[in-house]
Each structure stands twice: as C-alpha cells, then as structure tokens.
Amino acid sequence: MQMFRRVLATTLAVMLMAPTGAWAQQSHVINKSALEQAVQQRVSQDQADREALRTFLQNPMVQGVAAKAGLPLERANTAVSALEGHDLRYAASQARTVNQDLAGGATVVITTTTIIIILLVVILLVVALD
Image (cartoon, rainbow, N blue to C red):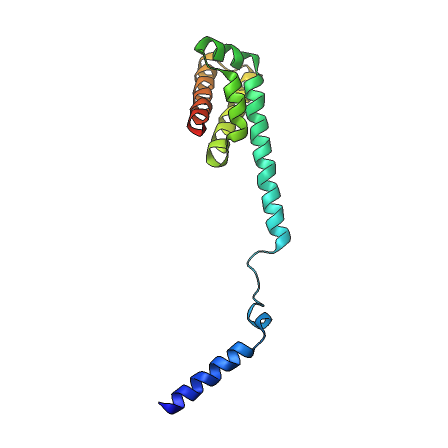
C-alpha cells in the first residue's frame, strides 16, 4: 500500500508540473478559416432567403391577394427579419417557387393558394414571435 501511494504521488506531481500547453496541443476538427467560411455562407444564404421573401411580398399580385384576404403585409414584411432556420428556408423556398411561377405566367389558382399559405405562415410566425 505504501508503494502504491508513492507511485500515485509521483505520477500526480509529474502531471501537475508538466506544461499545460503540452496537453492542449490537440488538432481541431475544423480550422478557423473553414468555420468563418461556413458562417459567412450561412449568413449569405439567410440574406438571399430574406430577399426572396421581400421580392415575393412586393409582387403586385401578392399584394392584391393579401388585400382581398385582409392580411396585413406590413406585419409580414416585419416578420421576414425575424425568421430564421428551417422556417426561413421553407418560406423562402415557397416564395421562390411562386416568384418563378408568377414570372412565367403560371395558373393563378395554384399561385393564389400558395400565396395565401405563405402569407399565413409568415403572419403566424409573427404572432408567435410577438
């Protein structure tokens, strides 16, 4: 038992005296520049998604449908800044689809339904965030 205590004390003393930098010299899974690039890419994607939603909300046909349905576009415009993550990506994807359909002259029945759904999602998110 005496021998065990001496070995343990010596081991602990060596570990405490060793430079801490030697223990911290582990390689990172991702380097700093790759991390910064990933963050920048995410920020750029979020900005592009918000721009797609703003373009959608500025479309005269969308504004007409929203006015007929009694949906306030001011709140929807405000909500675009608050959206993030999956909700932002989903709403932007739907908005891009509608923007392309409206630019290509797709049928109004399908796009009107999609417009109303997107506006309702955005407004529900505004209400939930307030």
